[in-house]
Length: 205
Image 1 (spheres, rainbow, N blue to C red):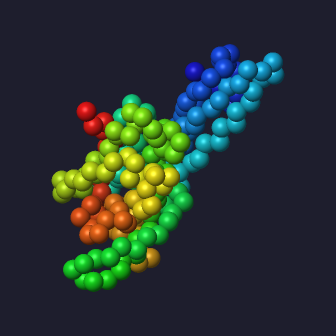
Image 2: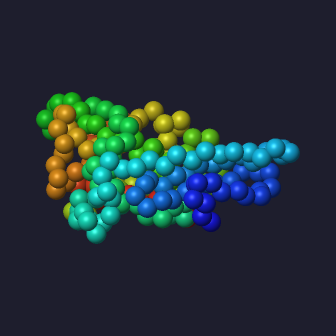
Image 3: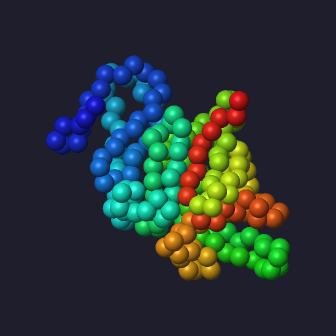
């Protein structure tokens, strides 16, 4: 369904819970759960689409090794993010201990939960039942792969931070390897995926 020239769309929906998805070329997709209540008066839902800091989100413009592809399964189509796209999102910093150097290394990046939430993946109060069998496979450009349960990236269930880092010690990781997966609560950084290129949501059967 498409909006009119003023950007509005009228629907006749029965009371209940719906997942609202809105897309526009050049903008991040909008995904939100809405509640339609029994009422004689029309309900109004306002959608505000965010525009990436860069138009380089298309893989045809940015080489695949320089992007992060996120596959959210049936919840959303695959989305590829370039460095400038993640730079425009809210960041958090974490410090992890590196055993071989016995130092604390500080990374900054976007919470993986924030990325997944924007794609309609069930988190927070929606992460329950069958959704608790979902897991994530993170892959580096060298083929190194690690797994996390979806519950591990949910801040309402797990105390640690799981971020897609784009800077280390205040400096960008680099144009050739712009992303790194950081799992703060691991006792050793075995699931710290360098040169992160993809994250896939899968169901454990």
